Image (tube, rainbow, N blue to C red; front, side, top):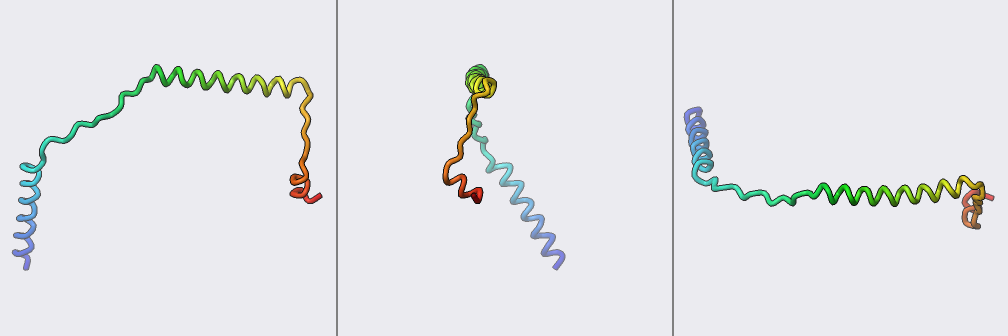
Length: 81
Protein backbone atom coordinates (compact mmCIF):
# COMPACT_ATOMS: atom_id res chain seq x y z
CA UNK A 1 0.00 0.00 0.00
CA UNK A 2 2.77 2.45 0.92
CA UNK A 3 4.73 1.55 -2.20
CA UNK A 4 1.69 2.21 -4.41
CA UNK A 5 1.08 5.57 -2.71
CA UNK A 6 4.73 6.61 -3.07
CA UNK A 7 4.74 5.56 -6.74
CA UNK A 8 1.54 7.50 -7.35
CA UNK A 9 2.95 10.63 -5.69
CA UNK A 10 6.16 10.45 -7.72
CA UNK A 11 4.18 9.98 -10.93
CA UNK A 12 1.98 12.98 -10.13
CA UNK A 13 5.01 15.13 -9.35
CA UNK A 14 6.60 14.15 -12.66
CA UNK A 15 3.39 15.05 -14.50
CA UNK A 16 3.26 18.43 -12.75
CA UNK A 17 6.88 19.17 -13.60
CA UNK A 18 6.36 18.16 -17.24
CA UNK A 19 3.29 20.39 -17.44
CA UNK A 20 5.24 23.33 -16.10
CA UNK A 21 8.24 22.64 -18.29
CA UNK A 22 6.52 21.99 -21.62
CA UNK A 23 3.03 23.43 -21.37
CA UNK A 24 3.68 26.86 -19.92
CA UNK A 25 4.06 28.91 -23.07
CA UNK A 26 4.63 32.63 -22.83
CA UNK A 27 2.30 34.62 -20.63
CA UNK A 28 0.21 37.29 -22.28
CA UNK A 29 1.38 40.81 -21.52
CA UNK A 30 -0.79 43.00 -19.33
CA UNK A 31 -2.47 45.78 -21.28
CA UNK A 32 -2.88 48.34 -18.54
CA UNK A 33 -4.05 51.84 -19.24
CA UNK A 34 -1.44 54.46 -18.49
CA UNK A 35 -2.74 56.94 -15.95
CA UNK A 36 -2.54 60.59 -16.93
CA UNK A 37 -1.71 62.15 -13.59
CA UNK A 38 -1.71 65.68 -15.01
CA UNK A 39 -5.27 65.36 -16.27
CA UNK A 40 -6.34 63.79 -12.97
CA UNK A 41 -4.86 66.72 -11.05
CA UNK A 42 -6.60 69.25 -13.30
CA UNK A 43 -9.90 67.45 -12.77
CA UNK A 44 -9.36 67.47 -9.01
CA UNK A 45 -8.55 71.19 -9.08
CA UNK A 46 -11.76 71.91 -11.00
CA UNK A 47 -13.79 69.89 -8.49
CA UNK A 48 -12.15 71.73 -5.60
CA UNK A 49 -13.01 75.06 -7.22
CA UNK A 50 -16.66 73.94 -7.47
CA UNK A 51 -16.65 72.90 -3.82
CA UNK A 52 -15.11 76.23 -2.77
CA UNK A 53 -17.78 78.15 -4.71
CA UNK A 54 -20.53 76.18 -2.97
CA UNK A 55 -18.92 76.76 0.41
CA UNK A 56 -18.71 80.49 -0.33
CA UNK A 57 -22.45 80.51 -1.04
CA UNK A 58 -23.13 78.75 2.28
CA UNK A 59 -20.91 81.16 4.21
CA UNK A 60 -22.68 84.11 2.61
CA UNK A 61 -26.10 82.66 3.40
CA UNK A 62 -25.23 81.84 7.00
CA UNK A 63 -23.21 85.02 7.53
CA UNK A 64 -25.95 87.53 6.72
CA UNK A 65 -28.33 86.06 9.34
CA UNK A 66 -31.29 85.79 6.99
CA UNK A 67 -31.64 82.02 7.05
CA UNK A 68 -35.24 80.95 7.49
CA UNK A 69 -36.41 77.39 8.12
CA UNK A 70 -40.00 76.26 7.56
CA UNK A 71 -41.65 72.93 8.28
CA UNK A 72 -44.06 71.30 5.89
CA UNK A 73 -47.21 69.48 7.03
CA UNK A 74 -45.66 66.05 6.59
CA UNK A 75 -42.74 67.06 8.82
CA UNK A 76 -45.14 68.19 11.54
CA UNK A 77 -47.04 64.90 11.37
CA UNK A 78 -43.82 62.95 11.72
CA UNK A 79 -42.88 65.01 14.75
CA UNK A 80 -46.17 64.01 16.41
CA UNK A 81 -47.84 67.44 16.54
